[in-house]
Image (cartoon, rainbow, N blue to C red; front, side, top):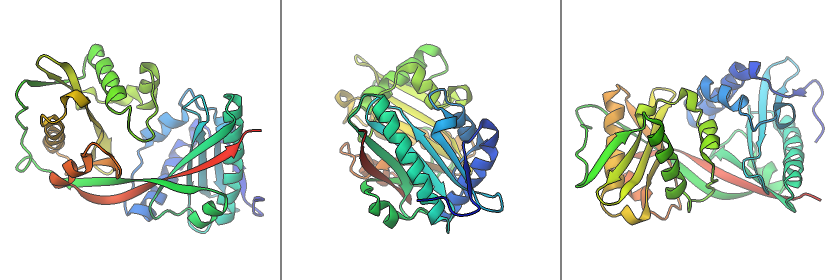
Length: 315
């Protein structure tokens, strides 16, 4: 679709991080009722070495020069899979469709460059997005998966530091060797999860913005006679929310209460740091019983995120 009269599109630069962050939080507030994006996250994304901002990012401005849309394309797979992000304020359908034209074309180019015969595009949207999903369906996009964001209030009085299961020891990843152990455990425990993308250690460090990670909030669990068997990676998300990015237990070590212990440790650590809320995301079709574990520990639905997919030829 042609760009509406008076609107402009240009690539993003690192200097646009604050404006992009403000847009993302406006969209978050409309869709979920609260901001969910930190400036550090946006700065890290725009500075990611695998991202070519000149060709893989777009800022949509209205005739008054206000930023009303943002698009990003990421090739993490080196193959057919290409990830897209789009954030759009309400009432900007035509501009959003123009962004889709640009993003889909670029995604097909990246997949073709990788030698793939097709491009498989994935886009994450909140369950009630500002983006018009009817128009997406008309372009061939389809809904393929749903994740729930769960949250729970925490406090030192209700969430004391738990005792570990017999034979389990937990250590924070303040040393390089432990960070490498955490990376390896994440690769192994999440390998069978939907949409998981293997990453080597340097790639993983780039993805998580290692220079800003508080490694005292990342732990590895060791089991007597088994070595390292589980990982817990947490951090902070606005506004004042502890977030568990990864809770993973090796299949051979499941059924020993380690996952529940890590979850309770997450709650206790968040409470001890003075944070009022702990939260995480979970695939609604997760086959490991994670949803039941989280709900059984008092977590409740905060909002839902959907994965949308589109397949395009590259020739």
